[in-house]
Image (cartoon, rainbow, N blue to C red; front, side, top):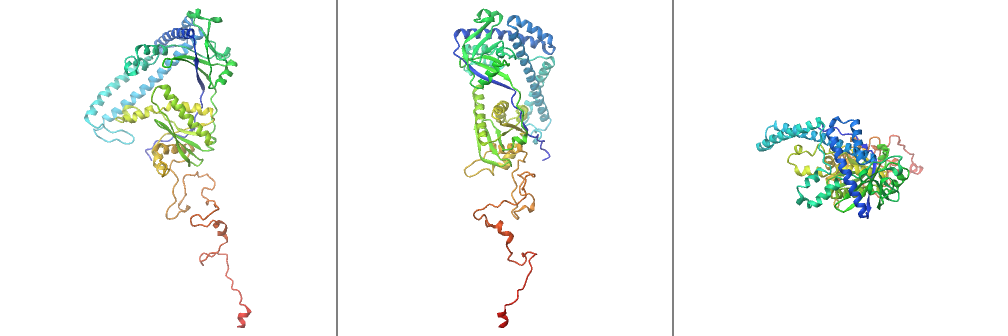
Length: 545
């Protein structure tokens, strides 16, 4: 037990701080599509120039340079379009800097691991805490070459970070690389070109509190009418006052549409983004706004009606309901999803699985769901797991970040608390203590089901180890606590079991509790100490005889 790392205490996760909904822009006219394409292409080229200028500034960026860039963009678009473009540029640059820092940490971890293993003799076994030497001299030689590659790569990344240089591709680096693998991606050059241009368009506007309908650049009325403020070079395309273009197509938000309409009527800030899906040939509108984070309830109140422990896996969620004492109730549930295909399909699969999980939790009357606080950023490196390629692919395929964000957002709408627990040893200890006892002739318990019990018990503060069986020689409380499952502060934990009326149970008659106090023992040793032996006098008839 001395080698075990400390386990963090469970906590109630915070709710979402924003809302984003999407709806389809139905039946746009050819003129609508022409205007949207022209505006998106023009603002996309302006955004590319602004991103190039921001990357050139590097660490020398200041408020004055930001204001100068915004003034230059205003002449090519408008003041509000310039504000949205510069804000998006800064967000993209900051994201690239965070990715750069994570890349440095990953390279440093890999170099440290390789150096440690190269210093060990070939074939030396590792321990739980540190890996051993490499298996063969050939592998040792190849790792020396890889060490030099990683060191050179780390020097370049560190130099870029110190100089403030970032490498950003508007439209996505993966889509850019697809240009050289069109056959594998099953795309023609024209299809790829259309997707590439659509990804580089810019049609998004930040919300403005106090302005009419919550946005001066892109307005959407409660009835679904969409109007856009045209940039200065495209002002001749306007069909409404003040250089605006009103689309003939309408948009209706079925999900949280009334909430958006209320914000629009109150002139509260709502941000919009219009984008084109080249695969489906459809236009979509995203609406987003900020909300105050929901106040978290105390951990004790969340666990008042039990908890549902959930184990996250690559293809399903394993869940089991636990009562307040940590006992599993009913049968385990599994919610499957398929993470193959494109990003939209994977996101839909995760969303549908979480919907089924939350509906089951509501039907059970449980107020809390316990999940692991997983983060595989430092665990899926190539140098840490070596030849375990399938394991690396397994943990890389788990949608931990997306699932965590989705679950927190969806649970907030259903008034269910999300409890994050430390993932240390849950699978190992769950299989050790709960997999075999919870299996039966008609039920097969997997390691993932047992891990869900361990997760739920850790959220409740109970030990993962199941209750101890009474000793065979003397099945009573004389040898210590009968169970370690109930909390020490539970009333009646060490008291006798309550009497259950009905037929004979084991060897104790059903009325034993009511008659035991009035019975007289049949042996002299068992006679009560307060009883006195009294000799009655003989009858007169006996004397006469």
